Amino acid sequence: MRHAAAVLLALACALPACGSKSRPVAPELVEPETVENLAAIATPDGVHLSWLRPTRYTGGGRMNDLGSFEIERAPGEGAAPAFAKIGTVTLEDQQRFRKERRLEWVDKDVRPGERYRYRVTAVTLDHYRSAPAGPVNVRYGNPPSAPAEAPSGKP
Image (cartoon, rainbow, N blue to C red; front, top):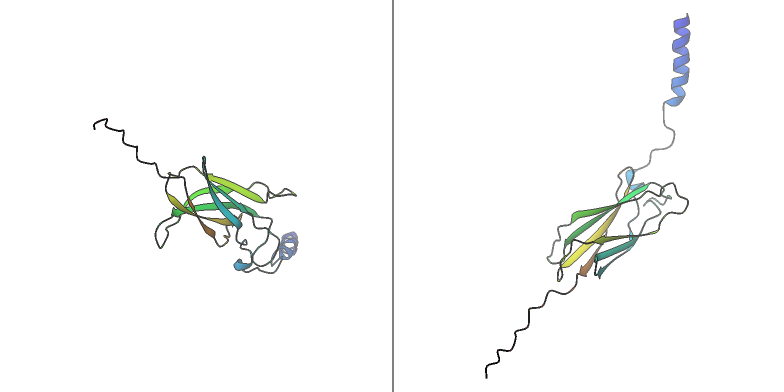
Protein backbone atom coordinates (compact mmCIF):
# COMPACT_ATOMS: atom_id res chain seq x y z
CA MET A 1 0.00 0.00 0.00
CA ARG A 2 2.83 2.40 0.85
CA HIS A 3 4.47 1.62 -2.47
CA ALA A 4 1.26 2.46 -4.35
CA ALA A 5 0.90 5.70 -2.40
CA ALA A 6 4.48 6.67 -3.23
CA VAL A 7 3.91 5.98 -6.93
CA LEU A 8 0.69 8.03 -6.91
CA LEU A 9 2.45 10.89 -5.15
CA ALA A 10 5.29 10.83 -7.69
CA LEU A 11 2.81 10.87 -10.58
CA ALA A 12 0.86 13.71 -8.99
CA CYS A 13 4.05 15.77 -8.78
CA ALA A 14 5.30 14.86 -12.26
CA LEU A 15 2.13 15.40 -14.28
CA PRO A 16 1.85 19.16 -13.75
CA ALA A 17 5.50 19.51 -14.81
CA CYS A 18 4.82 17.79 -18.14
CA GLY A 19 3.40 19.65 -21.07
CA SER A 20 3.83 23.02 -22.60
CA LYS A 21 4.49 26.08 -20.46
CA SER A 22 3.86 28.41 -23.38
CA ARG A 23 2.91 28.20 -27.00
CA PRO A 24 5.65 27.10 -29.39
CA VAL A 25 7.29 29.89 -31.36
CA ALA A 26 8.36 29.54 -34.97
CA PRO A 27 12.14 29.98 -35.45
CA GLU A 28 11.67 32.86 -37.88
CA LEU A 29 9.96 34.83 -35.10
CA VAL A 30 12.96 34.64 -32.76
CA GLU A 31 15.65 35.60 -35.25
CA PRO A 32 17.18 39.00 -34.48
CA GLU A 33 16.36 41.89 -36.77
CA THR A 34 19.18 42.87 -39.12
CA VAL A 35 21.93 45.15 -37.79
CA GLU A 36 21.32 48.83 -38.67
CA ASN A 37 23.62 51.62 -39.87
CA LEU A 38 26.62 49.45 -40.71
CA ALA A 39 29.52 51.71 -41.71
CA ALA A 40 33.18 51.15 -42.59
CA ILE A 41 35.84 53.87 -42.45
CA ALA A 42 39.56 53.54 -43.20
CA THR A 43 41.64 54.87 -40.28
CA PRO A 44 45.37 54.70 -39.55
CA ASP A 45 44.68 51.72 -37.24
CA GLY A 46 42.75 49.72 -39.84
CA VAL A 47 39.17 49.57 -41.10
CA HIS A 48 36.83 50.83 -38.39
CA LEU A 49 33.37 49.19 -38.47
CA SER A 50 30.41 50.51 -36.51
CA TRP A 51 26.74 49.51 -36.31
CA LEU A 52 23.60 49.70 -34.20
CA ARG A 53 22.47 46.55 -32.41
CA PRO A 54 18.97 45.25 -33.08
CA THR A 55 16.54 45.47 -30.16
CA ARG A 56 13.74 43.27 -31.53
CA TYR A 57 13.15 39.89 -33.09
CA THR A 58 11.89 39.72 -36.67
CA GLY A 59 8.53 38.66 -35.17
CA GLY A 60 8.32 42.01 -33.35
CA GLY A 61 9.05 40.91 -29.78
CA ARG A 62 11.59 42.71 -27.61
CA MET A 63 14.95 40.91 -27.59
CA ASN A 64 16.97 40.31 -24.41
CA ASP A 65 19.15 37.37 -25.45
CA LEU A 66 21.45 38.86 -28.08
CA GLY A 67 24.78 37.12 -27.60
CA SER A 68 27.24 38.23 -30.27
CA PHE A 69 27.97 39.66 -33.70
CA GLU A 70 29.93 37.90 -36.41
CA ILE A 71 32.05 40.03 -38.74
CA GLU A 72 32.78 38.76 -42.24
CA ARG A 73 35.06 40.16 -44.93
CA ALA A 74 35.49 39.56 -48.64
CA PRO A 75 37.84 41.03 -51.23
CA GLY A 76 36.39 44.20 -52.70
CA GLU A 77 36.86 43.08 -56.29
CA GLY A 78 34.90 40.43 -58.16
CA ALA A 79 31.29 39.70 -58.97
CA ALA A 80 30.56 37.01 -56.36
CA PRO A 81 32.30 37.87 -53.09
CA ALA A 82 33.41 34.97 -50.90
CA PHE A 83 32.86 36.17 -47.34
CA ALA A 84 34.92 34.65 -44.53
CA LYS A 85 34.44 35.16 -40.79
CA ILE A 86 37.22 37.35 -39.40
CA GLY A 87 35.92 38.30 -35.96
CA THR A 88 33.30 38.04 -33.24
CA VAL A 89 32.06 40.71 -30.84
CA THR A 90 30.67 38.96 -27.74
CA LEU A 91 28.09 40.83 -25.68
CA GLU A 92 28.02 40.63 -21.90
CA ASP A 93 25.31 43.19 -21.17
CA GLN A 94 22.17 41.02 -21.42
CA GLN A 95 21.35 41.62 -17.73
CA ARG A 96 21.94 45.36 -17.83
CA PHE A 97 19.01 47.73 -17.82
CA ARG A 98 20.75 49.96 -20.36
CA LYS A 99 22.48 48.03 -23.10
CA GLU A 100 25.21 49.34 -25.40
CA ARG A 101 23.43 50.43 -28.61
CA ARG A 102 26.38 51.33 -30.90
CA LEU A 103 29.11 48.76 -31.35
CA GLU A 104 32.51 49.05 -32.99
CA TRP A 105 35.26 46.76 -34.21
CA VAL A 106 38.55 47.40 -36.03
CA ASP A 107 39.98 45.14 -38.73
CA LYS A 108 43.74 45.58 -38.36
CA ASP A 109 44.66 42.89 -40.89
CA VAL A 110 44.37 45.13 -43.97
CA ARG A 111 46.80 46.26 -46.67
CA PRO A 112 47.09 49.74 -48.21
CA GLY A 113 45.44 50.08 -51.60
CA GLU A 114 43.18 47.04 -51.11
CA ARG A 115 39.39 47.14 -51.29
CA TYR A 116 37.28 45.18 -48.81
CA ARG A 117 33.63 44.30 -48.29
CA TYR A 118 32.21 43.73 -44.82
CA ARG A 119 28.99 42.40 -43.38
CA VAL A 120 27.78 41.81 -39.82
CA THR A 121 25.32 39.21 -38.48
CA ALA A 122 23.60 39.32 -35.07
CA VAL A 123 23.45 36.00 -33.16
CA THR A 124 21.29 35.19 -30.11
CA LEU A 125 22.45 33.09 -27.17
CA ASP A 126 20.41 30.22 -28.70
CA HIS A 127 22.33 30.65 -31.99
CA TYR A 128 19.49 32.17 -34.03
CA ARG A 129 21.04 34.40 -36.69
CA SER A 130 19.85 37.60 -38.33
CA ALA A 131 20.16 38.24 -42.02
CA PRO A 132 23.61 39.76 -42.69
CA ALA A 133 23.81 43.56 -42.76
CA GLY A 134 25.78 44.96 -45.66
CA PRO A 135 27.91 44.57 -47.50
CA VAL A 136 29.68 47.89 -47.05
CA ASN A 137 32.70 48.64 -49.21
CA VAL A 138 35.89 50.45 -48.27
CA ARG A 139 39.34 51.02 -49.73
CA TYR A 140 42.12 51.01 -47.18
CA GLY A 141 44.59 53.83 -47.75
CA ASN A 142 46.55 54.46 -50.92
CA PRO A 143 48.85 51.97 -52.59
CA PRO A 144 52.51 52.72 -51.97
CA SER A 145 53.84 55.03 -54.65
CA ALA A 146 56.87 54.12 -56.72
CA PRO A 147 60.06 55.87 -55.62
CA ALA A 148 60.91 58.90 -57.69
CA GLU A 149 63.98 58.57 -59.88
CA ALA A 150 66.90 60.74 -58.88
CA PRO A 151 68.24 63.04 -61.58
CA SER A 152 71.27 61.47 -63.22
CA GLY A 153 73.27 64.71 -63.43
CA LYS A 154 74.34 63.95 -67.00
CA PRO A 155 73.62 66.60 -69.65
